[in-house]
Length: 256
Image (cartoon, rainbow, N blue to C red; front, side, top):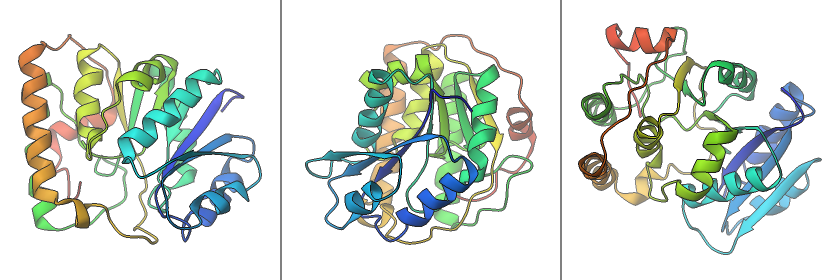
């Protein structure tokens, strides 16, 4: 970790879990800068974030979705001169103790994904429907990029300066944007790595998939992936990494 590292936390109605997330983060990385992007919350998310020492709060006027919240965080990172950033959820699923592992992996990559399903990761249980949908997305990305990703939808990620600058302008705004990001980053020639991480059960709040229509969003992502591919051919890219090699032969497990 260095003085130009930032943790970006998008948050929508997460006042229940955010204080413990911020406390855990401070315990593990007491000196790291943190920005919470309040995505139009109707609860006390902004207030509890501002009450945590050293946390910058950016408030969106109404709920724009996680993609727009993250783009706001990336723009802040670029404007303030940060060289690296980590995306961390406000609901307690992402373990702050894994942030150093993601940042360390940036020494050999431009974008690092914290994988829930690579060798060394903890077991992450979800239902059969999501497991099947995830495998479809894995297959689609493999067909379109030639790459195998063990976790296409993990939102626990680290970005170097070049990726921050790129996604400050181009980060997709739709739900399940994390899958599209892998396609975009591959086509732009960024080096992508996965590292196994611990992932906790959701500590509170309501999963967004319940209100947005999971089936619709999986279909939308698949259509978007193939439309993007029809407009641009992928750039060749290779990176040697344990999780990527494991993904070719291991059962990716369950979840999205």
